[in-house]
Length: 199
Length: 154
Image 1 (cartoon, rainbow over the protein chains, first blue to last red):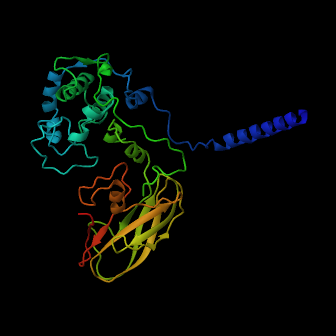
Image 2: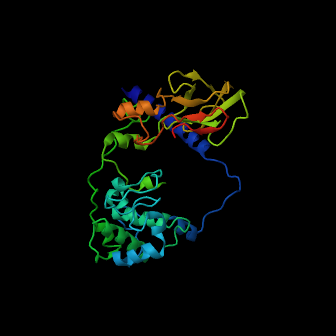
């Protein structure tokens, strides 16, 4: 039993030494290119807003302000005057009477998967508008404008009241309609097909 | 990151599973849409194959709508998660034809045709068929008799 323990220790030591040498070999050499990003550069990249919204900046906005911005920032140009029927993804569920003249682009976002109705968190919408809109002028919206546009889309899809103020405190508290209605992917292990039986 | 990452969550666990990782996928880069073959004769078809499940093992070509498949050759080393170049020596007789490629990855998963996907979901295989999850379906190019190459689904 004693000998067995000793052997295991030796083996463990050997494994550790091998492991360390692997680590030192895995560190890549430096080639004298690149530089450490500045604090300001990191701040500019670090714009992700998590579900709980704790990264949200100060600011506020309402649906009424957002309705004005939807026109002034020319959102309607791609998303349609009513937030649907344009070439860009549908933002406001349509009345179902008018059919879009445009083919659905990939990813196809139509009435069945409007972001405000599908996203699990309102903060997700804030992040997306802030990060990716308006197309070609991404990142230029001010926090107040992003709060207002988010409030506008939430109101028009029937999730909040028109007079509700959206800010860093209220936005994460919005209960999204699809919060509890999505599927978790089945347990998947590396090296196995993504879905058994799928061709 | 795309718009789809922003919470376009699905209610069907099967679709969720197909959304996490792309299956084996291949495309023919030559000949492809908007190109024009000068005339009948010998051509080297080339394309790329990849898979979220690992390295590409093999690629095949079909010229009869997916009824029969002939092996293509891998033209570059096949690494996991990497594009693998494939090639195929082809003699075009000048008649209109539809060409497709399909690949198989190291798990043995074969890239499916739209017909096979439609059958799996029990849906008609028409232009309304929506491929659920990440689309790794076989894509056809149609070569017209004048040598012009077109989207084989349109």
